Image (cartoon, rainbow over all chains, first blue to last red; front, top):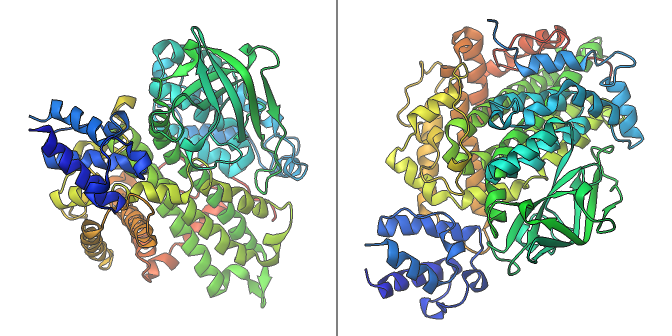
Length: 79
Length: 556
């Protein structure tokens, strides 16, 4: 799966959570700085599992804390 | 071979007669210490002699902790006698749990030796300007080649001064980041002189004798081996460890609510009004019977959830949040309603009831307060809705948790997870489960109807990544009540002693209380309560042999 598809989806998801437009999400700014609470960011793992059918750790967004970092990681595990 | 005695019975006997003068566990003596805001040092020393600390060390590290249900009983029995003592002694488990969850075998072995030797271990999370927000801490740990240097102040820490070891959460990365904090097991005896000082005891409303103080580090060097878990793993390890301790907190509420109910019932038996015992007045009888039913609900939730630590470990992020919200909240309500039975006597300063009422309030605050726990549930709504829709049930794990006679598998800490992928088996089992018979007057059908309705609402909920709206907290409260109803229903079928009429009446009464419906089965509990108080037996539905002495029975 191309990384930009994952990246676009992630931006939409994060924008939905922090209630802004996807275009406003800077993919290189840390999610916590965008306003996504660290504990809440664990919810992304469930979304990722539903969307891409892969199992990821609940802490995946802690270890890959920006949209681009997370997209890069997912590119490696989503086939 | 005779089976080992349940710790509840052994410990209650070891604590001795609560009314005996000269007993370090006498209620009068412990009340006097509370009045003087003095630490119950003799009582704690006696618990050390009894070897209670073996329950704080898992069996695989050489201790006696095989079942968390045992530790729950220990906490309940101690809290029933005196919560200051319980808090002071059991805190060592809280201080140690991070090492049991994430420490190396060497760290665990070393800590086990010290705990078993009677040393006190504390957990230092909160700071003066940052309460429940674990990521806001400003204590730092700075690495050099061989050490970490710890600087800053932890405050409102139970046993910070008395503790020999303190498990400290310190910032090792960027402020506010989930991976920016690490845990350190700090040995106060090994710190270079002058690099730490303990802060004065803070006067508190409840547990007045407890060592609630703080510790300030200035360039305190700890060896590399002091770090517990991975660098940056502090929050993750803590949130997993708290899943165990938040569940165990239910035992504190059970013990204190039981004590309060015993005091109020004894008072209502002795006190006369309008020419007859207070307990025969319908209003008083109703309050006492409802309190007993509520205590049985709290017990069902706590015991099943504690067993689930072993058998539904991966669901404990949901279960522990439910217990830590629901049980202390329910027990606070019970104690406050019982206070009205006592009338003015409940207000007597330095009386036992008043101490329970003051002491209990702290349970809803520490170790993650009520809102933190509701929020933890809100964050998992999507998974809970999905699990219910798909009917996911970990059958083996649920049966092991609910069948009280069954031996539990050892806890595998690696199975703890920050989110429950499978949702919550107990609740998700509701639609399929066939109860023994719905002798509960339609309560079971009503519980299922509410389960369906609530999950439809959960599925429609928009996740909240910023500020959680109050409606979502309300949904979380309803979810917890649903879980409580499912626990009462499930234990009716699972508990071997529960097939009798009394068991069925009791669970029917519990379901009615959870659903907020009227049911004469609740009033029917009063004779059972009176008999148990009179005979000094535990106010519990668990099939343990009755205690020889029971808890407090002396005058309010």
